[in-house]
Image 1 (cartoon, rainbow, N blue to C red):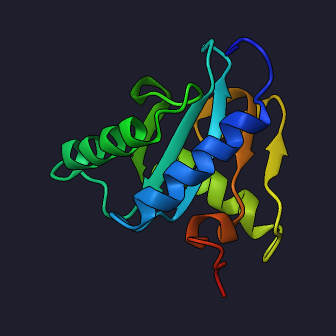
Image 2 (cartoon, rainbow, N blue to C red; image 1 turned 30 degrees about the vertical axis):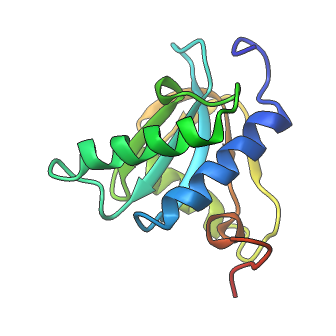
Length: 138
């Protein structure tokens, strides 16, 4: 599965995880990437609150949420928590700023993304992060 394209089931499972994680720790941006060296898609969740002191707590909450979801398209090895100031997060935020208020995600192909060569990326729209129980972000 991972050697192919990012599928809608992964995108939807990731969106749910991001929304639920946002209730625990404010998420600035979330995106899937497949690095040029990697063989699998990874869901990156970026927050200003992720740092050396909160990293393990963040992964603990992500694990709890993933176990609760029990979804075959997500496991802890597909998740990467980063600070919002990381080159990856900054690149995702910059791409999202090009389409303010867009209700759809942004797909990218092969390119440099931050400081990483990627085969592809999918950046969630800002509204996905804040959506909860049918209520979308203002």
